[in-house]
Image (cartoon, rainbow, N blue to C red):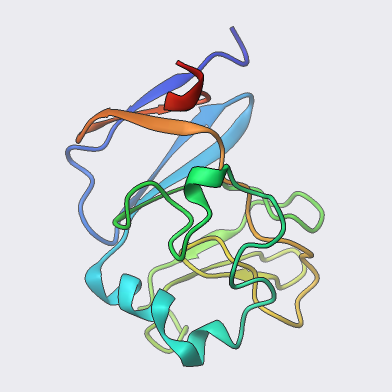
Length: 151
């Protein structure tokens, strides 16, 4: 049962908010991105700051290999563990010293990830955050641990 898929209802998840569920003993973050978040993820000035903006390293299923690293642009699903040494980063909403740009910051060694889970340049983390297999059964119910391809 430890590796079994988990369900997450996102019907009450408002833009800019995040919930955490546990899958295989790991935290999985589900973030409802705002329109401003989505605009920032596409901004060329932002993209040049990233180590792997095109997600060339395979830390996501093929269906999430896009500019948002997700099935739906408004919802991010990533494993909340830094790819450097396994610490758990903190979600900074943009109102706390990040120049208005929300991101994930790892307090252990200073790695930063954008709201697509892409790692910034010049930080210790070598790769983007991992996107687990997942799919939606409807607009409000997410299944983490299996994708629709395997059904």
